[in-house]
Image (cartoon, rainbow over all chains, first blue to last red; front, side, top):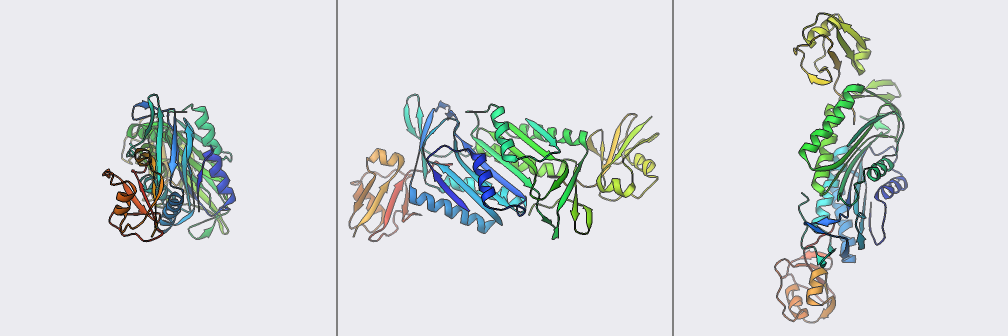
Amino acid sequence: MTAQIIKHIFDPWQAIAKHQEAANLSQKFGATATFVGTMRDFNDNADVSAMTLEHYPAMTAHYLEKLIEEAKIKWPLLDVLIIHRVGEITSSETIMLIACWSAHRRASLDACNWLIEELKHRAPFWKKETRPDGERWVEKNTDGL
Amino acid sequence: MTAQIIKHIFDPWQAIAKHQEAANLSQKFGATATFVGTMRDFNDNADVSAMTLEHYPAMTAHYLEKLIEEAKIKWPLLDVLIIHRVGEITSSETIMLIACWSAHRRASLDACNWLIEELKHRAPFWKKETRPDGERWVEKNTDGL
Amino acid sequence: MTIHVKFFASLKDKLNLEDTTVEQANTAGQAWDIATDNADRPSNVLVAINLEYAQFDDTIKAGDEVAFFPPVTGG
Amino acid sequence: MTIHVKFFASLKDKLNLEDTTVEQANTAGQAWDIATDNADRPSNVLVAINLEYAQFDDTIKAGDEVAFFPPVTGG
């Protein structure tokens, strides 16, 4: 079970493959559910060329671990990986990923779904977007629709 | 939107990355939800060293396309990739993957979740397991728990 | 008329039948009876007509492809 | 007693305050009032005490870290 907060660009699919190999889960897991969030070049009808993700380092690390612990209590998970960027992010870069491994499909799917919503609502990250008319803090998360 | 039925081993994360790059979705998608099913070395309390996946080629291809079309009607999806193995599969190999791309998270997450359940219940594939006491057809799908 | 009939998976093994044809069947159920020589029909057998799920009393016509198979177990 | 007080994101910019300390505050709300010189508290401000979400009238003690921030927008 790993939560990472990183400042550099990363490839989510390589990160998942690498973690899975290192975790030595082979022959035990039958299901992997993942979610990857990527920076789009528009939001709320405005062009967004880049953004800065601020966080509260100690609390953010604590909350990501806490969410993983809560998910482990709720579902029989073999492993969980969360990676979240902070700092400067430009269009089409990966912002974050969640990956859940379990023996059977429902645990990984339900945990992945739960983790993304909980992370959005509880983990202390804040986005500031760079728009044509300047920088602007995102005031609140969307409902994902 | 692509559905593939393949006989050879494949790396799901490379397949997703490659498809995403080829689909030229950059800067349009903000969310990717995926599910990967992997062959475990036990099922229903018995050791399973390998299995054979049979399918009904024309109907299977038709149903995978049909499921993708239905998902596109239900959710605003930018792209969907389904890859499903047939033939001989050995322990720890990938059996199938579903990947959904959308602008916002709920479409990709909900569509991925729906597609795996629909595929399990409607797409004509049949598993025959190789156990210590011989081969055995899997009689029905589990509920995923 | 010729109806193409296919069997899959455990049903194929059990009946020792894979691809065959029948003449003069008006429904999928009749195609089963003729192709299998009136074998018992397990309660969970599924039927597809021209690649779509169907019912045993659905009518069939010349050239149709009727398939019988057990519950699907992919994914 | 010393309470560590932090502000994040738009709140940090608006108040021009990031890290500070206050003495003699019994609740998170008092820490806000002292640290911000009684600035108005936007209705959506969140508070954390020692890295856990808390309420403005929760009590604080020497050495605690109190943080104020707007709704989170990660993911």
